[in-house]
Image (tube, rainbow over all chains, first blue to last red; front, side, top):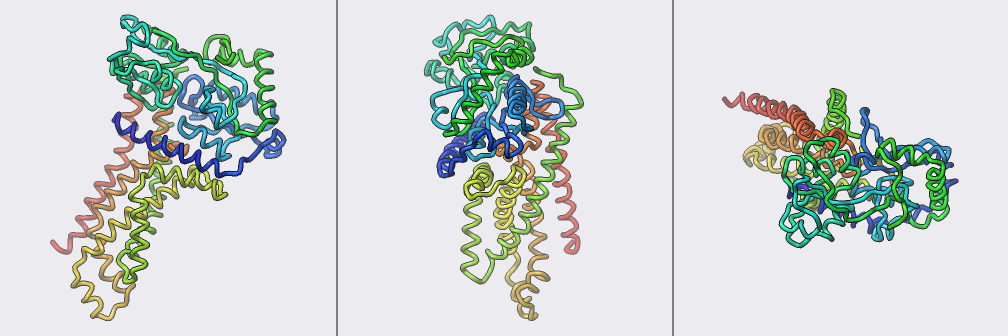
Length: 268
Length: 217
């Protein structure tokens, strides 16, 4: 089962590269704020398999921190919102092929991604670290030597852990957070690379097991993504993020979904 | 924000089940139409038709279904069309099914003894008459097991449509798992639902084979 996932995602990774090539052949549709208003609705893509930022509610509709931010953005724009569920591999192709106007999809701001899309100012931040049992002797990246470490494929955890772990650490890649967590809970891996928000939920689910964050690898800020060359839209979105930070609405959403106040949102 | 697994989650999965069934039905119906055309083209007298059909089959059998779905969905935008995930998944699966069914049925047509072809010609039947009354009925008898086998495979490969954002049964199972963190329960239920779809087909296949073989017993 593990190798079947990895082959499928290698194909998906290759497709992603192909789609990027295809996308460069597309005329970039430069959208202004007025163009979106004239269209009558704003389509926003978000993840639905990354709790608590993106999940599905009891009706199967998108919900979570990103959903609330997206709905607020649409309200400020004055148009109805259409939230489109996307996945890790296809979120940027969806944006590049004009199927969505914006991505509020927990996209960590990285230099590689900034080459393909434009990021707004950060609207969320998470820490990426390694979680293991309290009794585990792991204290630093070097201790991962020879251990099995679970990570979510193509996420920022993947990049951070792959960069920091020693060569003989056994890295096992899973499709989503729930699978990685399950691997840890059932003892199939010794530790997982995970964000602090999901770690919180694991501790809530299994308090007696005594999981703890062994060390923090990096801090990541997340931005709203849009196609390149849309400066007017970028200015508007940055203004929106600044506004909801200043008047406390973003903090309210953060407390609702993550149970704590907004962390430091400055770019690391 | 993990919620409990309740009957509501089962209803979500059943809702997704109907999408999987609908997608499989459309892909099989469209694929059957295309497959018959391809199979007849592969066994045609004209060499050009045979090569064209062979080329089509090689392309769709030789590339991953995942890639075909991806290219239909995102590639349509390059040529100026805007397709939604449902249309793209139906189209991609239809094209793929057409290639596989075409090849299966070509083999079954060619498995009909040469004597039947000659006898049909001797009776004065033209091409469509030969096919309709003599060759295809016999080929269909041979075709039942592999066709139903392919249909079962098609139902399971609809799960690949998740790459283009189509929320069918497997993907919905993943989403429910991410909301409830109960993978054994969720994925056992999903497997059960797939089995509930595929097993009746195998039973149907056995029944059809028995009926088709009745005159020769």
